[in-house]
Image (cartoon, rainbow, N blue to C red; front, side, top):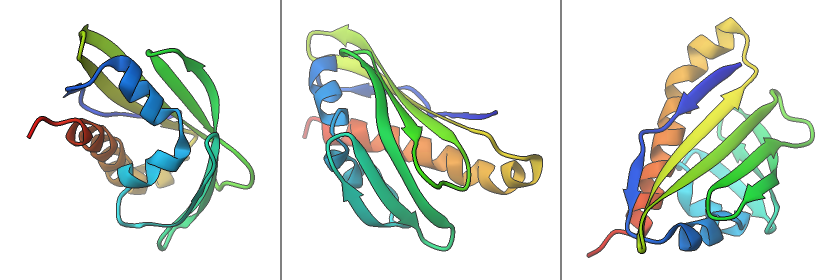
Length: 135
């Protein structure tokens, strides 16, 4: 299993507020890189295409209030994967967020996909932080 973990980001919002945002896939399009197209989502599932790669689907698998959201691949994906968002309270109106992506990749695919997957988790964490940045 290949694991890609973002840097921890400080977010100027409560864990509850961030958890609420991440609990709905309809909010995720704003977290995706520009290569993600054909985004379709309900609250608990989504599907999309990564240009030049593949169509993917995923669903919310479990949630631990204000702490973790666990997402898994669903349907006919080229690889099984999971995506986790971890939240840690730092204050009444601040928390830390990290994103972890795990996938069953063979060594060749891992060598090709490592940089884009690491960039994906870093981008998602950074976009969550930017969403709640104080201006």
